[in-house]
Length: 353
Image (cartoon, rainbow, N blue to C red; front, top):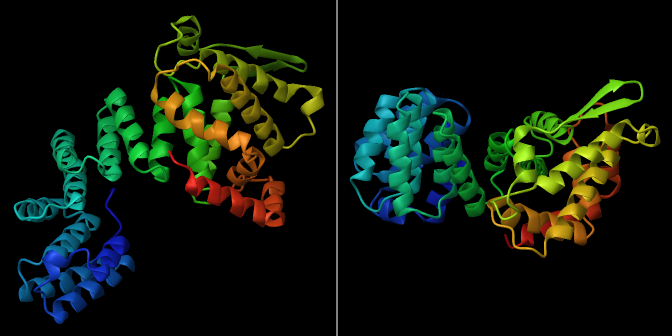
């Protein structure tokens, strides 16, 4: 399920951002809601439900108690009750984007994806800058094989929230087969944001597949290069077609073929990845003077070229390799260069997407 964080909601509550819903709530109601959120975060969902119900006996129209109850029902798989509560909440004012997110997630879990899509789209009409709504919409669209629409939704999700790691990861998965270079950038960005998370190992496996695409060792000293139909379509297509990375894609294939060169056999995976990413960025730098339509050309490419120009590409490469099994040199480098890592992370935080 793709519910918003209850920890975030309790912070908002305590900060007074739900003041309209809580203005008339007695202290006892607020205390019960806070207890419920704590129990929820501890995984004690049934106990959390009891606290929220106690709060609603005292204040039947309390927005936060109803919303937290809906989210807890979702975690218990009681999705029909989630839908009922969200419908009730949407009749009130002011509206809240998290209600649409929770509502749509429940519908998706009830195997009603078209209804979920409608709810997300309704929410986006009211909250067009909410990245999580775009993300959930994209996940549901992908689930019903509407991949082009899902890709567009994920692109909007990362535009609205550049630090949403899951959106970058999903975008990488959606474009992995059809357009390698954007998928590489999306995957690297995901790993940059979650270098040590449980998902990082899978992200590295995807990145390895993308970087080695079209390269196959066929003998002791023989390597076969191949191009997919999508790569050929870009190479032979019009230069101004959206996100045409045909030239860079070919150069990346050739750079990956050098993995099997004797002169590179003693280099670590981290060093080789840094060299290939450098080669990719250099290829794109040579083309940047021309106008290039498309999301990746105008979102990912400027970031990575600016990053390379600032000298942070080696630091980035070591950072995203932190979770790679059997490659301790990456973590050793990170441990020995904390100031470089901090400087890079601060630079990235300040970058204007």
